[in-house]
Length: 450
Image (cartoon, rainbow, N blue to C red; front, side):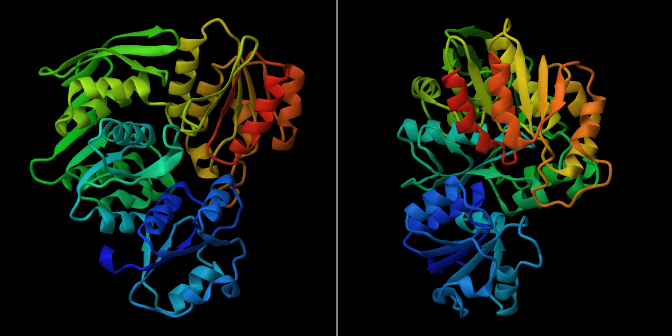
């Protein structure tokens, strides 16, 4: 299906961060957009305000008349998170509609464009958002499909007038193999999604296939230490491009960029942590490969406000610091905790963590317990199941029992706000990829007025 022929698009699972970006893109193109999702969220409310019709009932009758008959100009986009017995999904399948995954649609959009794709088991949302911001802020321009809400633009999609597209390339379900990038970044390849891949070797195999799809004369940026050949980057100074002289000044991370040809001194980054300095190094390397000037890049990095739920400072007051982060893998938790410690080394850290997926909790239980044990106090929520059914013996209690710190407990999500109110912690961190974000506003109100 060619992009120019698409006039109507229905999204089965429209509330997802990646799906909603596509919905906004096609709406901007003037297409008729409708969709279904099982849960109302802030994001679905925004889509409805933007004129998109959304149903929250999985019944055939809720499908609008524009999508009840198959037409050549109609596209149905679905997410693998939708259950196979979904009545709406089965309606479209039975009628012979053209059904595409989000990744396949990104492939259609990016075909014929100059594609910058960022992949990795973590770090890809921040890095792709940084690249998109640099290209936008410098006036170079780009269209971008991102896996988070950028704070600079309060959106997960940017609209450019040139032929450049920035895409967050998702490794889940091998989705990123629909892309053929001109510039590719691989931020990490830690074992994850083992319910799909089985083991780490098969995950690495998919990343190698993604790297092989780089167009001729393209640029491939690889986090130093990963088992793929490319232009290495790091925050240690031992790679082809690197960050040097890293320090904290006035709450910002300041560093120098060096790639053997270009040096950029005293870059200021509001997003804390050496892992974000590394993300910025990859973003700068990508921008330089497009011919953007070092001076413009330095200004853009300084103005980057970050991504919602990626080390987002919710409360920053004299008595209370509250940070929220999307971390849901042991390595992400470790990087997040390190960043907190670098900024606030003297404060007692209270962590509220919601494990995400039974399989991930099972596969990395020992690693999760080891990282969580480094916090001063941990409050564990029940496991967020997402697309999974429970697994016998895999519970938050199992995780709690493996942790070695003394100040730890399990708490129901609905009781967290009252618990935090009573504890009145000086430094609070909420982490997880499930629905823990519904606690952000209540906790913000509690800690602001404590």
